[in-house]
Length: 264
Length: 292
Ligand SMILES: Nc1ncnc2c1ncn2[C@@H]1O[C@H](COP(=O)(O)OP(=O)(O)OP(=O)(O)O)[C@@H](O)[C@H]1O
Ligand SMILES: [Mg+2]
Image (cartoon, rainbow over the protein chains, first blue to last red):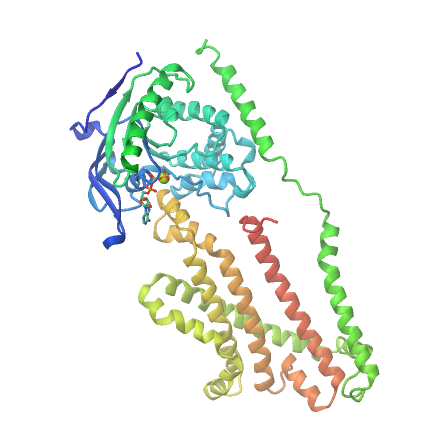
């Protein structure tokens, strides 16, 4: 029931069974002696409908990886394939809300860019704001909200993209534990309902164990995939359950090992 | 237990988050009344005005200059009261304002196009970026001899100098606006599918609007100065304008008339500045740029 099995390297899978495939991806920022090797030869397959959590020490290249998958940056080497060629929706590490738009305007913008009709947009925006429990705040400006509320607006806005692949960069980092638990339930529900594929970056190992079908550990500088666990805890899960705690402990041990290897 | 209490948990979750949000937002209400705000910004200005009038009156009493060179404040205001009843006075204001507005609108159009072009096209930036800034340092009055040679004594000579005075500031506002769009917002826009023109329409333009408005405000100030300088030099017969009026009254040694015309010029400048400042302030507040 509660087993954590190292998935062992990267399995070759037929393309129709992968939603996202990274093959030998490297990313170097800058040139010469000042160059930063953010990612080195990362290969990763994510199956359709899979919820994959990416963990790793700060600065190991998690955000870099997501922006490569979102096609906002080009890899220095390697290839990235996204099934259907669709651009994945990315929820940034910072809320990145547009200050000149209201909360509802922010959430509606991806749909406006897709030329969704005004009436349909209003309906969808209201629904998305309900999802993140902000239905009363549609007319506010982003700067009038707290940090955690902004993060939730950003989540609603990313969901408004209606993409089959969702990339989330520490989406709940700025939230208090209670709100975070509730949003864990929400994101899990949306993921299941829409059959999304999710690549979810987090510092919080428990969160990774709570949400992920898989947990992928990246090493630091250069970032490489060093471990890949399958989380076989049935859903619904609770973040404070002993099974989740046990998995989190395992991942944490391995993460510590990684960080120590760097310290020496 | 976990299954059939789903709804109850959901409702509870709503309440919990609503409660937390209420705590988050507790301190946002502002109690100051509108009248109090107006008064707070008005009284320093009134005090400054009273001070200037007081000094003027004292200098007048001291007899530093003959009364027909430096008249008393009340004499000037009496002259102003007489002037506002004449058609010429209003025609002069209308001519000057029309020239100012036409020049400003033209400068804004040129400045916007130029600014966007320079901000976007690398070679253009290399070629024109510093030239635009250099142009700004050129006192506009220095352009008039050339303008008169090119356009004779005509409306176009004035327009030429007004546009040259204002367009560089406006272009610079646009360039810095576009340059300082936060990269994160550009990336967000791109992720939402905004490309090329739609990226400009939905992200770059609104993000740079505050800088553009500052550029427009500065552009107006330059346009207004160039315009008045121009009206002193380029005098078109049978067409009253504020600058022409100023020259004419000086030739008649009508000091009260000169000062009252200057007051009109000053007031128009202050009003225009207030319009731009209020647009600027409103924008910054809406954008969340100043949080007092
Ligand atoms: N635009 C850039 N130019 C140069 N170096 C960069 C750039 N972006 C990221 N880096 C470097 O690449 C490395 C990985 O950065 P990245 O933001 O992907 O880390 P991260 O794993 O997301 O960290 P965190 O958990 O703190 O968010 C870091 O060493 C960072 O300094
Ligand atoms: Mg990051």
